[in-house]
Amino acid sequence: MKSNRREFLKGVTFTVLGSSLITNNALAGEKLAPFAINRMGSNARIKLSFRPYELKLRHVFTVATNSRTVTPDVQVEVTYDGITGYGEASMPPYLGESTESVLGFLQKVNLEQFSDPFQLEDILAYVDAIMPGNIAAKASVDIALHDLVGKLLGAPWYKIWGLDKEKAPSTTYTIGIDTADVVREKTLEAADRFNILKVKLGRDNDKEMIDTIRSVTNLPIAVDANQGWTDRQRALDMIFWLKEQGIVMVEQPMPKAQLDDIAWITQQSPLPIFADESLQRLEDIVKLKDAFSGINIKLMKCTGMREAWKMLTLARALNMKVMVGCMTETSCAVSAAAQF
Image 1 (tube, rainbow, N blue to C red):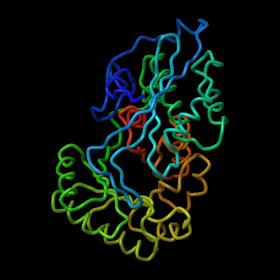
Image 2 (image 1 turned 60 degrees about the horizontal axis):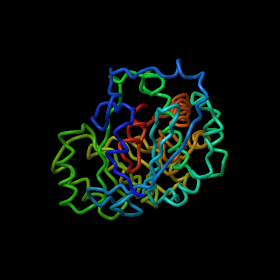
Image 3 (image 1 turned 90 degrees about the vertical axis):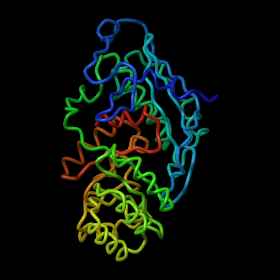
Image 4 (image 1 turned 30 degrees about the vertical axis):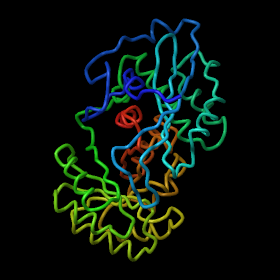
């Protein structure tokens, strides 16, 4: 069954920082009713439901390794005593998950054994231990539980974490690999709404992509090669050229298997080098600290908000730069990421 995206999103409580992605009644400054204190003595149990969905993209989205017009998605609801939290699993190709695998995993999740949604650590440890992998599926439950707890507390998660939304970092707009005409169109769409762009590179038209964007705007640009460069000297030469074009950072310049080459590039690069495909979970960060300047944390590849918060804390303790990214997701998961 495919459900309506607007119907799914209308109850989500995550507050987006610095944009207008969402929603209903959890916008900054608006207080939700604090259910938790009065209801924790009830016999309520946590219930899980889910349904598949297809996210249709406005443009073909192309990166170094694939192109797509649709991203499969599974919408998740976690309900406790009449209150519902929302999550999702988005499945871009490189994650290796599918609608079928996510649905199969979620069918194994028994949240009714838990009566206290505030026991996030225990609940999510149980979910993580059900079986290996299935990272996006686990993230969908994590996001829904955090949304539920936020509603019970009457606050968005950035407030629960003690963050100031006025100090939120800039949000980038991503432009996929495409023809010059389409790249120009996408740049014009974004230039008045965002103060930094993110551009996918990693194919033969890298310089043409940058030249086309520079013909339209002088906004700062972050680039993501998505493992598309394989020769370290050519990659480094490209990075020096990108620096001259006003690029501010480079993400995943080479395949994750070439970690030594990436470390060599990082040591000589005039721009910070961020890990994306090389990074999934908390334990990866220490292994990468000498090879990258920073990391890109994505909920769909780290099991969700709980682990993402731990990753952010560890990376900062190691003096690494941090960005929080997303896949092609609905405003539900994007809003969850925006809490950081």
